[in-house]
Amino acid sequence: MGLFRVVVIGIVLEGVCLTSGESTTSILPRQDLPTGVGNWWESAVLYQVLPRSFRDSDGDGNGDLRGLLERFDHLIELGVTGICLGPVFRSPMRDGGYDVSDFRDIDPMYGSMTDFEELLQRAKAAGMKVVLDFVPNHTSEQHEWFQNSVRKNEAYRDYYILREGAVRVENNDGAPPNNWQSLYHGPAWSKNVRGTEFYLHQFGVTEPDLNYRNAKVRQEMEDVMRFWLDRGVDGLRLMQVNHLYEDAQFRDEPFIEPTQATISYENLDHIHTRDLPENYLLAFDWRSLFDEYGSAEVVGATDRKLMITSAYSGSLENSMKWFGIGNRVGAHIAQNFGLLREISSKFRA
Image 1 (cartoon, rainbow, N blue to C red):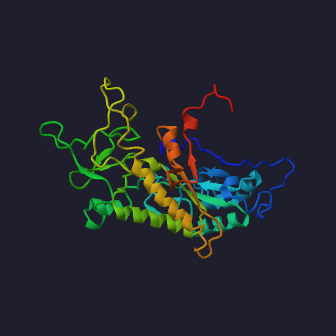
Image 2 (image 1 turned 180 degrees about the vertical axis):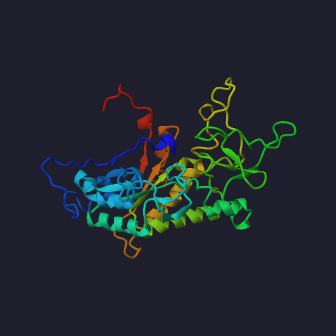
Image 3 (image 1 turned 90 degrees about the vertical axis):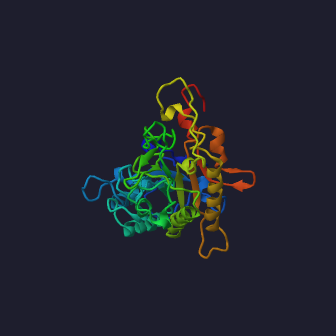
């Protein structure tokens, strides 16, 4: 996800501090937090862990889940109450693991599902929560859904955003369908290796966008979320959720400064590819899924599941919408990237 993951935000809703005299080396559940008051994340300190750069257990140059387990006491000593784990799904790793080829498997670089389940057990024994980074906007081009789609398998035909090129110049049918640009620079459209169609990728060229106007795609992604929540993950950080839907009419985006000769992501007003109302409505539907795990009707449900939205929205107003609109509720936590964009040394606490 490029620069959008360079800065990692620790989430502290109600600060939990440790004095220098406290010992945190025990793996017993923490006793210093209030119990029976609110939801667990209301007094949580979450530590972001990118496994690839945390601890290498086998000497191959990449951090892994075994390495995280080897240094788990380090997390306990920090006094954190949970970890937010960077993506560990199976991936060709062309975008740091955010290009997923299988949402239901652990990439061999990081270990196995057995390693992951051991991590969950270790965290539970220490009274810590595990939240998983999850990017629902796109897949890797190596995902079986995309491979089936470009092979024109009818069952997967509309899993992605596919469009014929626009005839913008005489005798040229190879132009992209519109002027939409990728966050990674250049057109947000690339031509399929089979046929004449273009596919949309708002991020890397190897990360085709899913088509959330297809009910099958929405169900597939709900099933993936349930897969991990059922395994014991305490929550999901849903990243780049403000890019899930695009304009159904595929209209060109207006220029911010029309006099500039070149088209660039920075010079387009992203009214057709970002922060569309449908994005919020889908998030509100997903919140209902998370709430199922905290209801009395769910057998064995002992803790509520945390839903975090992570969206680099164009304004604070758009960021606030992720919490809910009207009588619809959304994220429990909506990350505010305005703190990166707008806060300077001129501001006071």
